[in-house]
Image 1: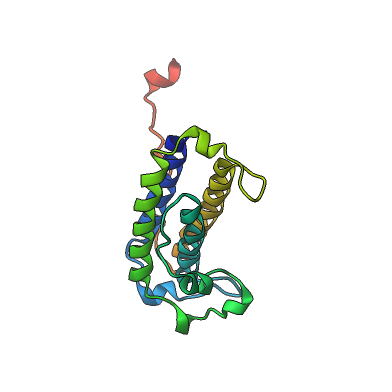
Image 2: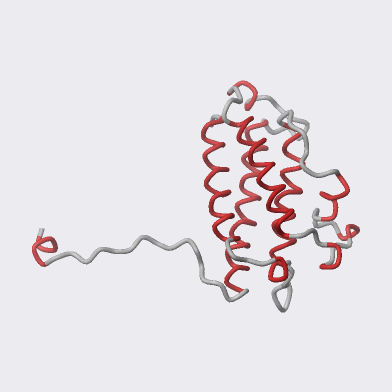
Length: 170
């Protein structure tokens, strides 16, 4: 694993995420799926909050002050509710800032740094990999929440081409 590979993974999930956010309004982002679950606003904020934890491990500044990240941490004591939600456009802007910082580090991080052990006993590369897995999970949730809002999915499977009779015979 190297920084270029990790950078590419984050680019792909970021691209999918922003495609799934296209056209979603702030009010729609506050809709919580029934019978239970978090709305798109919380899930997106949670992605930024987790990037906020990762960035300092890479020597970068957080994009949110700790109290903002705590609100979207998922901890019960944060007492998140739609009345406390940040505006969707603001979260998207902060996610874009975190992406710039993340790409700036990952594209140039030495393999030796990725192999450095962390306080958890995992290497820094393993920790970054876990953060990416966690983020990808939530990116998938956002794709589903888009559908819950009644919006069409944006990532389509490749179209199968119909083969001509001559091509089928081969």
